[in-house]
Image (cartoon, rainbow, N blue to C red; front, top):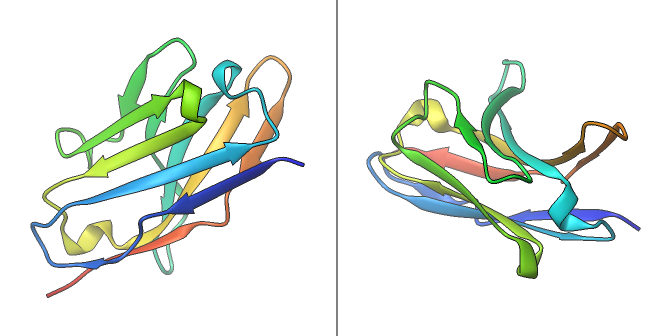
Length: 117
């Protein structure tokens, strides 16, 4: 059974930092690309950051320079470090595992990040 479990969401003040984790099981972690998405109330889900199986990383313009995505293959875990948070970062953050060639796509249940003073 495939499981992606996000953790680390919290209430944080503007300018603060958080690190989200996505721990996986049931998949061969190293062959998947991992994405972090977020969805704010009333808005569409948006791609925030990508950590590919080859080590490539990519970020949405709105978080570039503030967020860092990383993966720990031996620990089957993906991280999203978030710095200098602002209220516009408030959303549910989701972890996604994607295998392009095979068409496999798995999602976690999400973790809430709230940025407010």
